[in-house]
Amino acid sequence: MGTPYKDYYKILGVDQKATESEIKTAFRKAARKYHPDLHIKSEKAEAEEKFKEINEAYAVLGDPEKRSQYDLLGTNTQNGQQWQPSPDMGGYGSRSWSQTDTDGFSDFFESLFGRQMPGNNRGGPGKTRSVRGQDLDSELELTLEEACHGGKKSLQFSFRGLCPSCGGTGVSGQKTCLKCGGTGSRKVVRTLDVNIPAFIRGGSKIRLKGQGGEGPANGNSGDLLLTVKILPNSNFTLNGSDLETIIKIRPEQAVLGGQIPVPTMDGEVILTIPPMVHNGKKLRMRSKGWLEKEGNRGDEIVKIMIDIPRFVSPAEKEIYQRLADLEKEVHKL
Ligand SMILES: [Zn+2]
Image (cartoon, rainbow, N blue to C red; front, side, top):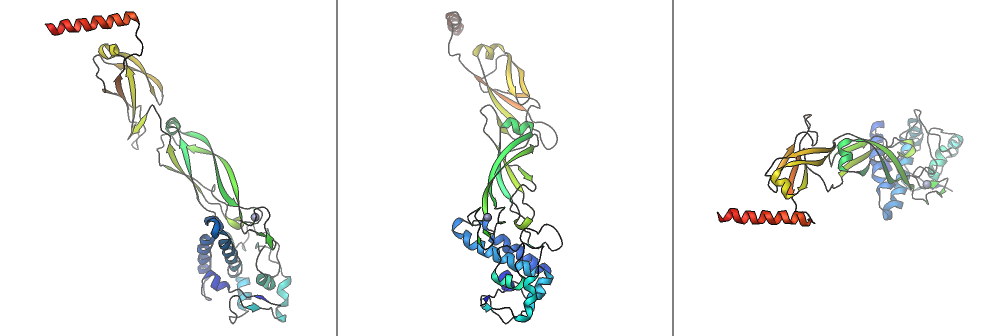
């Protein structure tokens, strides 16, 4: 009984004379293309199969010793054709290759190189199957105050990570991995403390090295790329480097002027309103805005809105009446 022959060169799409680096490049490209995490559900199974095959091909062609053994088989066999090891190749079956995780590889591979112990492929010169994990994107929502002051913020996010049981292959031994049901992935929820620089702006990116998806077969993890989103704030609008806010004052304050408390990013500040201020007038508070690239801070622009009190006491109403009578007299003159 034979096993289907595997043309590893064809699987990786490289020439038989390909250099080590050409093989490596081809493998990386193919592994990225067929990584099961990058495929939608209906394509997952097919991608997984392909991904496994690519890893197997690279485990052989990426290892000079295995490659030369494989090359000895010659080129007369087609991919998928039944193949049987010749009796003079008997030795290989008993050899053990501790540096490569070959769990779940094909019968063809096993008949050539023997059944090998999985999970012993950390480090060492023979580490051949490592692919860097995926970069992940996520959003970091900040209040305007958080964005202004910066500091640490705890962020929880989830993603589909590699199944630790099968390393993303979906198979364990020769069977479907029970931990992930053969999908090769599992939901990972991660909580991170993110360092936020002060005066960060919406749309800015924060890269967290190594916090992305795990690399298959102990490859380096990808990065997590956070895009800052500033939550809308009812008190402030950031316009360039200026923070804009609206302050309501009463009619007599508009006429007489006065001192009113105004919120700023640095806490409440008393603003002096000049007399006879008109509705819509903008008052500028220096250096209470956003930090500019040049190191200066923008301003806070306070827009005045004259508001009528909801309730007036009889005494106040009497004063308004006297004011109205006075106005009539003035206009008669
Ligand atoms: Zn699994």
